[in-house]
Amino acid sequence: MSDLGILATVLFVYSLVSRRLDRMAISAPMVFVAAGMVLGPDVLGVIDLALTSETGLLLAEAALVIVLFADAARIDLRALRGNSNLPARLLGIGMPLTIGLGVGAGALLLDHIEFWEAAIIAAVLAPTDAALGQAVVSSDRVPQRIRQALNVESGLNDGLSIPFLFLFVGLAVSETVVTATGWVSFAAEQVGIGIAVGVGLGLVGGALYERSVRRESMTSTFQQLAMVGLAIVAWALASDLGGNGFIAAFTAGLVTGRITPTCGETILDFTDDEGQLLNLSVFFLFGISAIGFLDAADWAVVAYAVLSLTVIRAVPVVIALSRTGLRRSSVAFVAWFGPRGLASIILALVVVEEEPELPGLDVVLAAMTVTVLASVFAHGLSARPLVRSYARRVVATPGVTMAEEQAVPELRTRGRHADA
Image 1 (cartoon, rainbow, N blue to C red):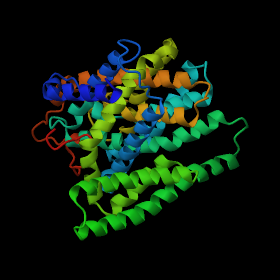
Image 2: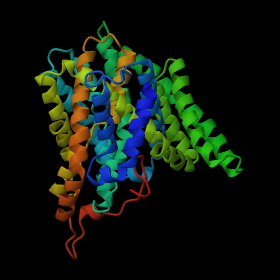
Image 3: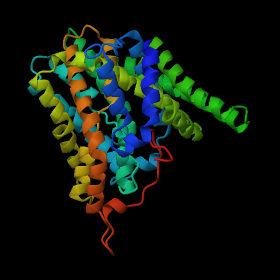
Image 4: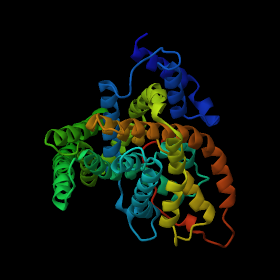
C-alpha cells in the first residue's frame, strides 16, 4: 500500500472510534503519533516517509503558515488589554522568561553543543499547543478567564517565538563576532521584509476579500480557501524577497483580521475541519521519524525535556501571574497546561531546512522529540482528571467574587469546535 493509503487507513480507522477514544482521554495526536511510530521503519517498517524529507518539510511549513495566519487574524485587542489581563501577562512576561530560562538550562545541561544551539532548542520548545489538552480549553468546568488565557497564549506564542528562533539560528551559524550593526541588518532583512510583505498583502488582500464578501461574489468554500491562499502567498513572497515568510504570514493575518473581521472565523472553520487533516498528518510523520530522532537523546536531553515541561514552564507562569488575585490552584493549573506539540515540531523542521549542516542539529531534534512525545501523552492523559480536580477547588464561595470569575470576552481560537 502507498504511504498516502496507509495514512488514509489510519485516519479512517480512528474516525470510526474517535468519540469513544475521546471519552477514554485518548486524543487524536496520541493515536497518530503512536501509529506513526509502530508503522515506521524502526518497528514494523510498513512506511518510510521521513518527516525531514522534502514532502514532510513542505507539509509542516504549510501547516505552520496557516496556523500563524489564522491565529493572528483572530486576535482581538480586547483580549490583550489591561495590566491584569492574563494572556497579555503570559505572552509579554511569561514568554520571554520561558525562552531565557530555557537558554540558561540548555547552556548548563547540554554542554556538548554550542550556546546558540541551546538557545535554538529553547525557542523551538517555547510555544504551547492547547489542542493537546483539548478537555481543558473546551470544558465549561474551567473558568472562562482561565480557558481564554490558555487558548490565547497558545494561539499567539508560536508567532512570537519565530523572531527569536531565526535570530538564534543566525547567531549559531555566524563565524564572526556579531556586532550591533549585524543585529540591525539581520532584523531589517528577516523581520523587516517579512512585516512589510505581510502588511502590504494584508491591506490589499483584506480589502479585496471584504469587497467580494459584501458583494456576495464568493461562495463559503472559497471564502475559506481565499484566506489560505493569501497566507501562503505572503509566506512565499517574503521568502523570495529574502525576508521571513512565517513573520509575513503572521503579519498578513493580523492586518487582514483588522480589515475584515469575518476572515478570522472563516479560516478557523478551515483549520478546525480540513486543517485538522494537515495537522494530524504532521503528527503521523513525526511518529514515523521519532525513534530515529532519539538517537542523540542522552540523560541530559531527557533532563532538559522534563525541565521544559515543568520548571521552565512553571516559574515564568508564576512570575507572570503574580498579583493577579488568582488562587494558587489556578496558577498551578495554568503552569502545568503548557503542552508542546505541533508548533515545536514544525519549528524544529524549520531549523532543519534553514541549516541542515548545523553541528548540533541532532540534539535539537532529540530534545524536541523527547519533549513533544512526553507532552502528547502526559498532557493528553491528565487533562480530564485535572479538570475535574481543579473544578472542585475553584467552586465559587457564596457572596465571594474570585479573580477567576472576572468577565472576559469569549474568543474562539483554533481547535475549539462548537460542539466540543
